[in-house]
Structures are given as structure tokens and as C-alpha cells.
Image (tube, one colour):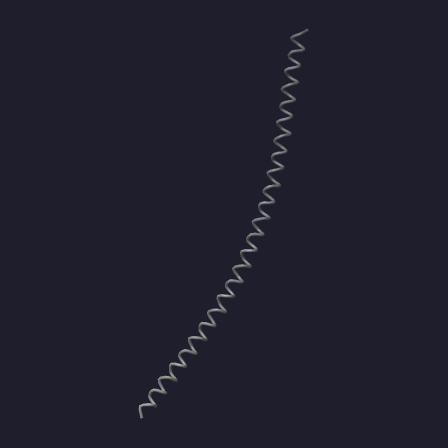
Length: 91
């Protein structure tokens, strides 16, 4: 008579262990899917950031070139003005 309640409890425990195993497997699958999604989003984010940095670098280069051209023009204008004033004063 004692063996029967023991078998019932063992059966219930085995069923509970199977449910726990199923839930853990489900959690593992969900975590793997989350990892894939996160990796995909991170890859896309890094690619987007890289494109943004490339565009920024291009804009900065263009601005730097414009600044150099403007400064060269100003310098030429100042040198020309100094030469002109010196020429007028020398006469």
C-alpha cells in the first residue's frame, strides 16, 4: 500500500521535471532569438554610424578646403595691398 503513493509522487515529480525542462528549452530558444536580433541591430547600428562618420569626414574635408582657399585668398589680397601701398609710397 505504501508503494503506490510513492509511485504517484514520483510520477508527479517526473512530470514537473519535464515541464521545467520544456520551459528551460523555450527560454533557451527565446534567448537565442534575442541574441540574433541584438546582433543584427548592433551590426546595422555600427554600419549606420560608420556611414555617418564617413559623411561627416567628407563634410569636414570640404569645409577645411574652403577655409584654406579663403585664407590663401585673404593672404594674397593683403600681400597685394602691402605691395601696392609700398609701390605708391616709393614713387
